[in-house]
Each structure stands twice: as structure tokens, then as C-alpha cells.
Length: 491
Image (cartoon, rainbow, N blue to C red):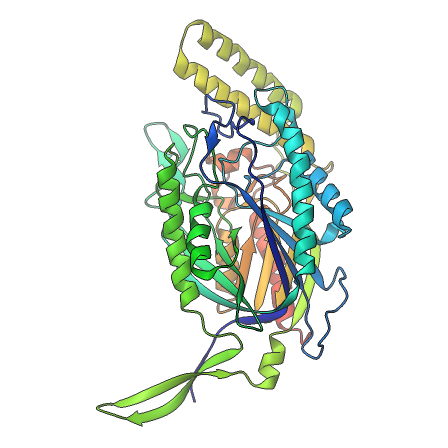
């Protein structure tokens, strides 16, 4: 008889969430073109959610001991990212306060560009005095939800589905009048519209959590916005949580060249509209999921006014059900070379001094547009210096990769911002295999990993990328090799 399989996983899962909204008045200038410094209010509160995954052997009724091979702690945070120094401090503090080994801690970011720039090097700016105490409180709150999530571990079934959403658009636009590329909606560019969802249900049939994996920069709100905001992920979660009664975790995909079709504005209403668009697309996919532990099987004909073909959701056979408990977890580094033309810190500082001179001249002549442009370029140089200072010495960077397999699904996390090719190539190569793709894992020291073809074009992500041409393709190749090895392994 014909049948349809739905991807399933079985594991132990614990979830806990908390509010992490910074105080009004904190340093907020995330955009170079912004003219404000402090957050003037809150559009939507920020949150952090801890999710603990642990292996659940099919032949065991007791939870296995937590080891580096059997447990992964994932924390999803409503921030753009943390720079290397702040990221290191957060991981160190959470590891110490929870007694969870560092290698098991994985922090991913929604990537909202309206949460504020939480960098210690902004402490001398208006609102910067609030950054250090906020980050200290963030570590305490994250530690608490990690502990709570570990305490609430329970057996769950994860069921996966794939939908579509047209929120994301290609954002590498060629502007012939400007003589180069701008970062904005490109109607002729391709955009991955995949919405990958997962629903976690406990043995009592209650929804414990949902996951939405989608690739799109949360840049609805831009330099005109002065409010702390989740951007579109907040409204997306609101839609789904209202329907399920359980936490919804947004997992940012490979969105290096993807942003909202309508964005770069100051109106919070548009961020909410974008979020509802994704939320309803994800919710439609969640509503269509099969019951856990089943497959949809043709049962045969029934004679009626027409001869009807009847299908039923039937429990999996014992061996198929046991396969949903399959677990494997590895963390490794992929060595990727720096680009040969990477600027030195001295060169960047010299450029910064030139823009400071331009800013003073613009302010003296009351040229607001020129002053804004100069401030934006100073901001670019400051961020470039932060990136260069954080890079390991030597010709390569060891880029961390996390990969764990639960039943029918692979969960992948990688540091940095990656062009959509990362997820498209892996999902095309392993067509029919569920692959959750998370980026900005524990930060983004190398900034972007663009495709080889956009190097030397002047596209924004390429201009600030620190890794050599072909790095993304090399990374994809190594991850694909690992997935293929696992698929061919009986373990």
C-alpha cells in the first residue's frame, strides 16, 4: 500500500524563556545613518529562550547522563549579535553559573537590528553606561533559563514540516545611477522562501514548543526607528504562541543576501505586518503536521457515490519508531583562509581619521547630509576595527560547526552570516532530508560568508567579509561530507 512519511524525532527536551528587554535610554544606534543615540522606548519586548536537547535511547526509560555527546544547550536571543569580547564574556558567565561545559553552549540570534548595539566600546557614548550592567543581567537571566530548561526535560516527539513565505527577498541590488550595489530589495534576485517548522509534543499530547527556521534579515526597522524592537520575529511568535499556547523559537537561517521585501523604515506597524506574514505561513504549516509517531497510509477503497480511496494515520512499526530516537552530535572546526587583501587595523584607523575630519567640516558648514554620511562611515570603521581585533592570528580562522542528528532530522549551526546558498545547497543535495540551518552561532567574527561569484563586485557583505573567496563553498562541501557520512552510518 502507498504511504507518506513525515519526518519525526524523539528526544528529551526542556524549554524555558524570559524577558531580556534593555532599559529605555540605553545606547541604541545600530545603524550608521541613525542620528539618535539612546533608545526612546519599546516597540516589542525582547526575549531569550533556552532549549535543552538530550538523547533518549529507544530501549531506555531513564534519562541518560548529560555528556558532551548526549546533550546540546541552545539559547535563542533577541539581539542582532554580540561582538567577540561580549560573546566570550556571556558564554563564560553562563558556563560558570550553570555548570554546563562551554562546548555544549550554543547561542543563536534572531538578528533584529533594533535591539541596540551591546558593545563595551560604546560605553563612552550616550546610553553606553547602561551596556555593562545590562550584559551582566543578561548572563544571569540566560543562566537561569538554562537551569530551568534542564530541570523540565521530558520525552517529546518532534514533527517537521516545510512551508513557503515570500517575506524574504534578495537584497543585493545594482543601482546603475549610483554606479554600484546597494543593500536593498532586488526584484530580479532569487530568494529562498523555505519555512521549516518543528512541533515538539510531549507524551500527554501537549505542545511543548514550536520552532520556525527562516532566512531573512530582521531589517524592517532601520535608522529612523528609535524603539527597542524584535522586528518581525516578535509578531511572528505572537501569532504562533496564541494558537499553540507554547513558546515559539525563531531560528535565523542563512540570510546573508536576504531581507524583507518591504523594509528599512521607521514604522513599527510594518515590522508587525511582516511578522504576521511569516507567522501565518508558519502556522499553516504547523496545522498541517501529522500526528507524531505515525505515517499516512492508504487503507483501500470504499464504495460510495464514487469509489473513495481512504487514507489513515497509522502508528509506526516498532523498528521505524525506534529509528526516530537515533542521536548523534559532533562539534568541529573548519579552517577557512583570510582574504589576502584584508586591511590592517592601522589602515582602518587612518580612514577613520579622514572621516572624522569630513564630519567636522560638515558640521561647521551645517551640511546635515554630509555629516550623516561621515558619521555612518566612522561607524563602519569602528565596526571594522572590532572585527579585526577579534580575529585569531594566523592565515586561517577555525570556524565552529555544530551538527546533531535526532531521528529523521539534522540540526546545523554555524558561526557568522552566510549567503542563502548554504541552506539551499545542503537541502538540494540531501533532498527529502530535514535540515534545520542556524547561523550567527556564538557570534560572527568573520562577518559574512558570501558566494564566490560576488567577490570584487562591491556588494556590501563582500566588502566587509574577512574570509577568502570560496570559503562558503568549502564550508558547504565539508558539512555535506559529514551529513553524507552520517546517513551512510548505521549508528
